[in-house]
Length: 393
Image (cartoon, rainbow, N blue to C red; front, side, top):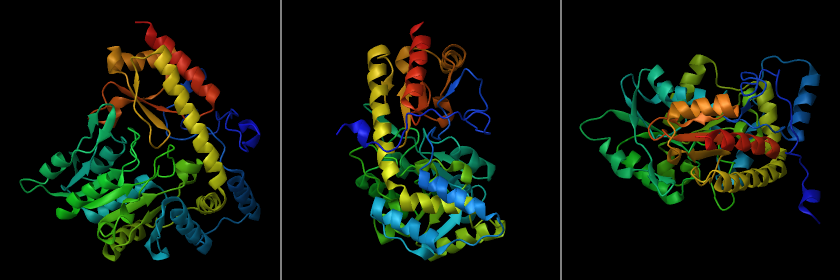
């Protein structure tokens, strides 16, 4: 039986997302291809759509309590996908991972405290820290032969001379460099943080999006001692393309940390999600595994095509190995094009929108991030335009 006959889901189908208030598609010109925002151009699983329609037909959308089935769906998903046994009393439903990070900053640090990030990293981390009156402390990743590793020595050094570094935000898997941290790497990071009394807020929103041969390890699953210092932020939003429904979960085993975090959510009255986010997440975690399996196969094919196409037509651009996420980190430094010129060429000549490397902070200059979670035809057209625009120099 051919592979085409066994595929149930049509990720090749191009869905017109314009005029849907899409941040990705409605804020660019009609002839531009946006491959920057970290959402997918694929329809969510049919079981999720059906569950939302069924709930909408009820017609009453009043104050809502979190369903017991919701918590069980989250618990079962973590056990099946990541081998992590969590408990109902560890879970705090919230409206998004970014708000979670802000809540954690308010809950566990004081104004003027240092918060550690590992750039190049998701560009929202820095303004969230600064806007809450805290100090950004950088622990840049080290690039070794095109692959990134953590700089443990520099992390240790950041605690010298009485520094008030109270919290570290971990991106796991890492956006934008595509690393899926290995168990030994996480253990070494945790050892340093525990030694210095630092809480780790682990952003694991991309944890289900893994390339073949890689396994995500929830940081808090490593040991009870490590879990005691970790706040885990998760969501079905990246996995099943549900970001607009604003639903996430924070998992905290330490009762003191749980109380500190939940007190902020209660004060702000946001310790819950909206009704459709709850319904969609429960349906996705209960029925979405087959859809996810085919999605990961499709993403792998898109990634392999990108590597092959650029290798043939624009070999100066080095593709950072993708271990997790659907965001590929492109090293364009060998082209000898400045970041400003690169931005102009991609926008004005290629008519393609990528995420510019410098926005991710230290280590981002000369890089571009491209989102490959789109139909293959869209990716091929975008790469064709990019190559044409960058070859002419």
